[in-house]
Amino acid sequence: MAFLQFPEGFQWGAATAAYQVEGAYNEDDRGLSIWDTFSHQPGMVERGETGDVACDHYHRFRDDIELMAHLGLGTYRFSVSWSRVQPFGYGAVNEKGLAFYDRLVDGLIEKGIQPAVTLYHWDLPQGLQDLGGWANRDTAERFAEYAALVYDRLGDRVTRWITLNEPIVFTLMGHLTGRMAPGIRDIGITARSIHHALLAHGRAVAAFRASGRTGEIGITNANTSYEPADDRPETQQAVELARDFDSRLFHGPVFGRGYPESVLRYYEAKDAPFPIEAGDLEAIAAPTDFLGLNLYSRARIEPAPDRGVGYRNAAPTLPLLPMGYEAAPHALGDFVRWVSKEYGNPRIYITENGVCDNAEPGPDGRIDDHVRVDLLGQFLAGLHGAIQKGADVRAYYQWSLMDNFEWAYGYRMRFGMVHTDFATLERTPKRSAAWYSEVIRRNGVEV
Image (tube, rainbow, N blue to C red; front, top):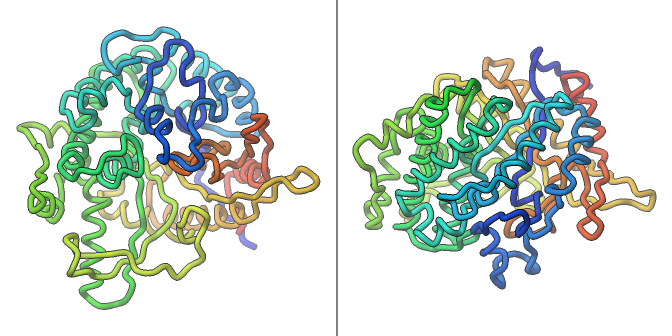
């Protein structure tokens, strides 16, 4: 066994998202979001489950903060529900919703836990979806107004902000495949949604700078570490195409490089051009302070000349986890090294990394999620290696603090280091919680 020490001052945290944990979907004047609408449609979510109650974090947040403090978390990433703050996504502001986040932020700070606030984690107000949602350019302006409201209310205490969580997921899976809210399948709407979401990010960064608040702001995206399925030159070219349609599509504009030409050609050939107007790319490239990375696995890539994008995922060769991901813990370190080289070694926060391990309580009530513990240790070993090679990684947020509503999978998939009994809402720390607490205490991992 070897002990891998992380840099002094490295932050250890955990993450959740509003719709996945809060519940209280129709309380205190909260408006409906697209996930309220989507999850209530038959067949959209496994077993017809919804986030109506979720983990009831809205009522139990003080107990959850005690759990965080017991674990030793130094920082907690959560998202604000836009429709709790502005029930329709524009216009009237809901004081009761803002007051909830006041209480949450104050409670965290009292325990010495730094809040890290995500402004948008997939739950667009239904009122804005009724006006076209992300396909409507005006949504970017409404997002900037909402962001300014939240900066004004929480910015005296919150100093770490994330504009959008995983735009690749809520644009492609929400508007191309229809697997996520709002359940649309239209490539033209997808192209408009991608561009307007990134424009919203840029507008929110500008609003933060204009607010005069101190702190840092960035964006978080879902990432996959791409590997060639063989050593042919055409396979390496296919890997670069995969990176164009994934990493570079969403990171490139933020870093001032615009959209990859391969992606623009593909969408134009589908008669679905990106609706870029004068000044848009400059707005999207507003300087940020860090890059948030979410990563769970890798993908092996092979050429596919018969497909418009020119590549496909090759068959997996590693064991599969319940979500269908390969158990590929080396992927985190590999991707951090790649993205650091690609974009000039930006400051990085690992805003999500975790393992779906559906271990249930044993006869003694204990939850031995040993698959999670083993893989997390290997993920962190790879991350440590990337830091040793010069990557500027300063924080790690495990997904997730507790089992929660896993979107279209409902409550079947468990990513939490704290077990949630969804019948009683009782929280029970798992083996991984004790393990992670020790990682935090020692600022390092034994592998």
